[in-house]
Amino acid sequence: MSTHDGLRRQLGLGAATAMVISGMIAVGIFLVPAGMAKSLGSPLLLLAVWLTMAGMALSGALCYGELAARYPHAGGGYVYLREAYGPQIAFLYGWKSMLVLDPGIVAALAMGMASYVDYMATLGATGMKVVAIGTVLGLAGVNMYGVRLGAWLVQWLTVFKIGVLGCIVLWGFGRGLGDWANFLPLASQRAGSAPLFPDALATGMVGAFFAFAGWWDLSKLAGEVREPERTLPRALTLAVVVVTLTYVLTSAAFMYLVPVQAVLSDETFVAQAGEVLFGRRGGLILATIVVISVVGSLTGLLMAMPRVYYAMARDGVFLRFAGAIHPRFGTPARAIAIQAGIASLYILLGTFDTLIAYFIFVTVLFIALTVVGVFVVRRRDTAPPPYRTPGFPFTPLVFLALVTILLILLGGSNPLQAALGVGVVLLGVPVYHLTARRRH
Image (cartoon, rainbow, N blue to C red; front, side, top):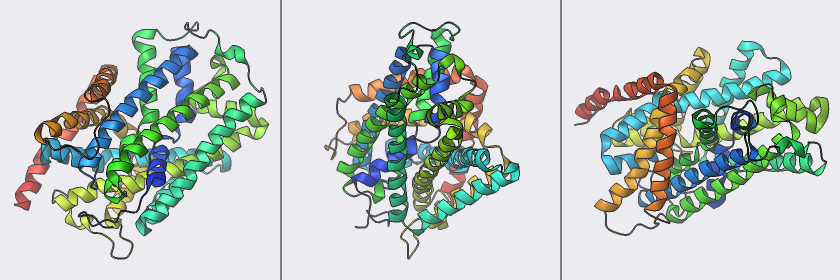
């Protein structure tokens, strides 16, 4: 079944759910729990932060579900911002995503994966870049070939990563390889922890947000999901629940295996837990698991993110050739090639970490604006949507309250960085007017 976007609806509930889970579970779960646990200094506080940010992700996902049901087209947040606020705000979101954040995230994940390959095979700096670029280009080719092939790969890699994390939990607790005393004190902060307000909570909330980040990417594939008004909300909700359980249980297993005070760094935490689980080869085993996990995430991102540039091209605010559908494969192959090319360039230059840091604040701001858009479109369009956000208006209000706290923490920790990111996005205003003038 084709849509007015020119894309075919081929993704069912299983593929859509796997897309969300794969995008959320990447390398973060192997790095974030150590920093969160050390900063918060209390297993109960760690659990509270995980559940709070899970509630934030779930409430945001339910709001995106309504927007996706109203506008089941390729582009996700770009489309919702366009419908709520007009084309200029949507263009700024797409401008930021296309030039910086999307390829930057792809580059960061690819290099992170390559660093684990280097741990196993000693590649060197040049070899790591070759592996990273080769992975990006190879997975881009998979997604150009067809949505079904990419979705099939994502589904199996998602099953693998969830299964492996489940095995780690069962193996660690089942064989008694850790120490229950590592969970003490349970509620009060451990000596040497960061002050609870604002340092510990800031570290915990920001870390958990990054671990849950990516639940919004499925909406970019709305034009290729079957029965989107039913499938998208269900997939988003199911994925957030599965990821929450995975994160809580995996964090508990890691704390059980390695006492927080013995953690040397976020990066070495994986190797330490691996040695407890599997002996001397534990680091290699977990490194392999991380590589496979990141490959799954990259596959999903290289499938979802280019749909934004494709939608922009179809609207005439981006290079028109990027809006073409491959005549044989039925995919926006040129948009995928653009993202893979920019990401490969960032890998060569090695500047992606700095670029991403500058645009996190404004990205969260755009997500908040998108959720506010639920109120905007409801007021303007009184016809009942195919799917309504459960608990409205409290669901979006809860999300906006939590995201406001997150924005304060992000902006307060580095106001110059946040301001520069917003400034660069605003440079897209004259670019938009130039494209609009050319279009008319």
